[in-house]
Image (tube, rainbow, N blue to C red):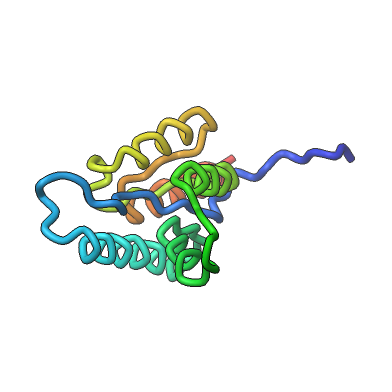
Length: 140
């Protein structure tokens, strides 16, 4: 057996992508809007978890700031590196509402496409895809 084994086509890990950082005139309170966006992303992850998937939630990175010591710094590029590293390990991506307004999500979608990671606009679409794949394999 070789050192590398082919990954199964079964989707287990999902990257939850979407709008986190509020930008533009549509945001009245950046801090509150950011928390609302986190809530939506975490809810999407919990729904995916209850559906049997193991989600990665970029919104959880806010916990880092809650425990940082004085003088410690996390840059935007560090966070982007962290998120991309986890995206590369996921089997699929689920988008949350308003994802089109997120420049970070647009970049993550491009990376997912480069890595042949399927992108779904909802959990329902992922579940539908998963069922179709299972039916195809059971017929063969």
